[in-house]
Length: 324
Image 1 (tube, helix red, strand yellow):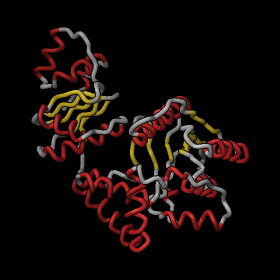
Image 2 (cartoon, rainbow, N blue to C red; image 1 turned 120 degrees about the vertical axis):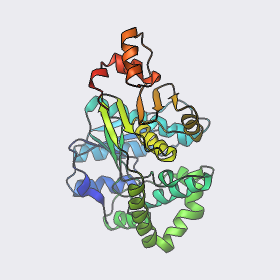
Image 3 (cartoon, rainbow, N blue to C red; image 1 turned 90 degrees about the vertical axis):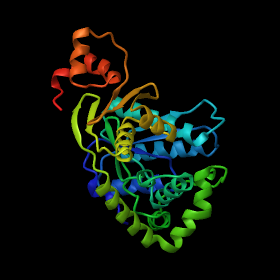
């Protein structure tokens, strides 16, 4: 299997584990390639089998000397399960990584997942960046996310598990088509890959090269949590730059938020992040409120610094460092 293991050069890695087909295969592939890692598993307490999956994770951790982090979700998720489960899962990962100084989160997403994502985005209206945002490498907050199996299909992973007699569990909730991803998996992506796997792999490679050529952000200043990019003068490209920055901060932009940014040019997203687009630059930083002296505000006015970013710049004493 063409696993992108060689690109994992970090020493402290956390594997998002579930005991299912993909993460069980990835666990043993990482072992085989001598990649250091510990594991994190979330129990949503909605399936009886999840207790066995937690036990399996503990057994693997003990046998192979891996630290095992377990999160028990006790609250009931009554609506929009997929999104809320993802938010809870990544909040757990963020906490572990920050407390233990992990450099990377490794996830077991594979080619079928990538095609499902592509089709789901395509079905609701999306541009090139959204269609291809399921990438092997991305940055979230202070760590990188690595998906080393994105070029490997589910049938290849199953063959690997059977050949090596590796234990794994089947999550029955992954079959329930009331979840949109499962619907696309059952009706479209799995069938399509069965016939056109090689072509799909090549198409994703070509599309990634096209996207990289089209969207090249130009970072002109970065310090602490302030980023300033050169404006492309093309709002479509500028919003892609903003979207990418916010994803690194753990925030996903909705279409409504994107429209608001382009309309207002200066606004606050999720009550957390200040965004400003002026004639030459794009400013992105945390949104805070701070009393500022008149002299400081006058300097900001002269330097054409957007109003909603000034408080953060003042608090972090960044004004004198700004040379743009």
